[in-house]
Image (cartoon, rainbow, N blue to C red; front, side, top):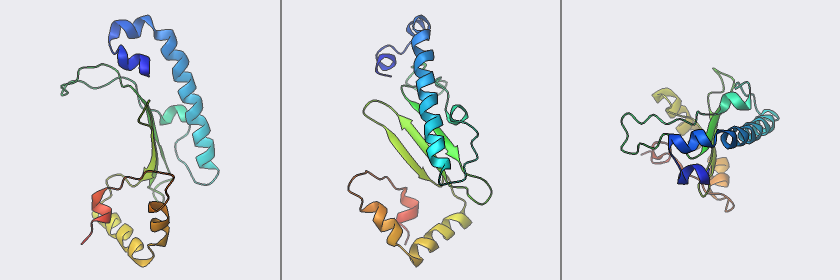
Length: 146
């Protein structure tokens, strides 16, 4: 991804397509292993690591940055629905790797349930927040509840 970041243009990408194909296979293998690990303790609906991955091409129509390619590998895994709607996300980039989970754009009813669950027993959340080995980002709508 460092090479792509330094040369983010179609000519370079086309000349180095073999490099991309090889690295893409490595990313797929990582996603497959991640899916295996997640499936060992959770019910995952995403059928394969490859299907979890986002495409490399950027939508530049409304962006000031016209770089045609993303400089990261990213993807997500969904859990079996409708009961298990929380999901997982990964983003692999030199100097900016993120692995997380959560509830993306919860509706008002789900948000109320999440808040009520935390209010009933906040110990599990506090354990996560106080883990000094990781950095956590929380959406303000969950924690900044009046």
